[in-house]
Length: 263
Image (cartoon, rainbow, N blue to C red; front, side, top):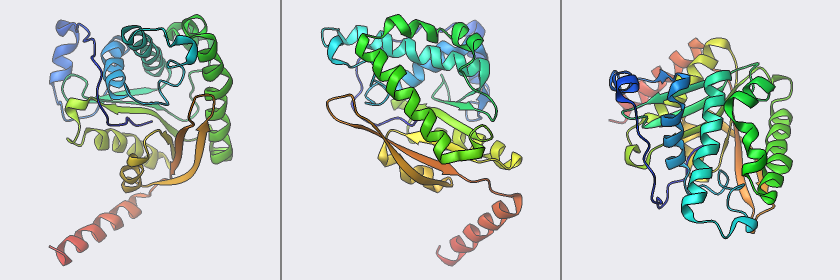
């Protein structure tokens, strides 16, 4: 998923242990780096800010039986969910960051990996959603959201379902957008996939981002609809086929030729 750009709610900053993380973040800010498990809170804060107004990400939080909740309570649950998911990817997948102060964070699930095993489920804290979500939130998350995502990925990828790279989340802090961080993060994963000859899969909750993904080689496959809310929430499914080294060189030469022809 990629963040929707919209008005930003009041956010609670988290305290960062600069002695532990600061030097690591300050080195090579413009280079994509792999996150350690102890950095999950800072990474989740980035994603929480990026997706604060995203209807799909908040689908299980903004429910009728939680209308009495304050904005602060909703934010706390929103952040907690993303902390669980980020920690799970640090354990079982690939979590990366680029830019100063965790400007952009991406969560990938490599081929043959998932966060469904009991060890990851328990260690990440995902089990807490069984009582932190409301009754309607649990129905949306466990009975609709997860099954729809799993079945759609299987239908689209077929035999390659467990043999592809899955971009689960990518988000940039509102203050860091427009600097190319998301593109770098995506290319970091797609280059790994290309080197292995594997496809990449994603769902996007913002139709505006389809153009961005298309520039990076992704093709639209189908739409997913979440229907338990007042209005349907949509996700666009996209797949990027692997590009060979020869194909990448050819594409670069074609782009260079086009630049020289149309200065």
